[in-house]
Image 1 (cartoon, rainbow, N blue to C red):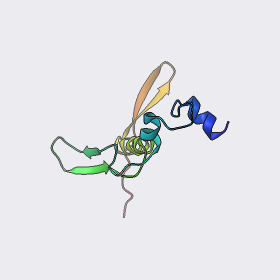
Image 2 (image 1 turned 45 degrees about the vertical axis):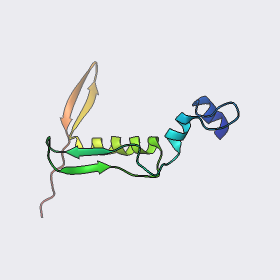
Image 3 (image 1 turned 90 degrees about the horizontal axis):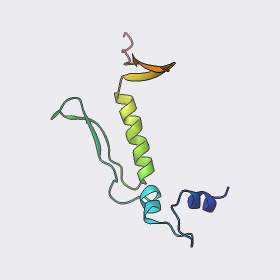
Image 4 (image 1 turned 90 degrees about the vertical axis):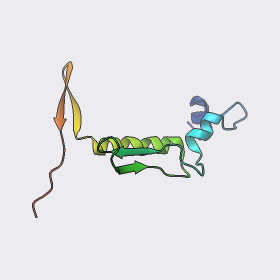
Length: 96
């Protein structure tokens, strides 16, 4: 399918082919970030990671936030039949 058909199926353009408000938020960058994600190791602690980038659409921001959360969370849920177990994948530093 071509770009116009895809955007129409996503409901982010109107019948005239103009981006809707949802399309603008999702795909058009703004001077100010749409997302301000800050990770702290404990409540009130210093920021150890953040995602706050201008000139990007919301979809790009949400992708980076998800990647930051995955990188900071050492637990992974692995399905096994009807249940899911947890595995700690925290990396240990290589000996020097």
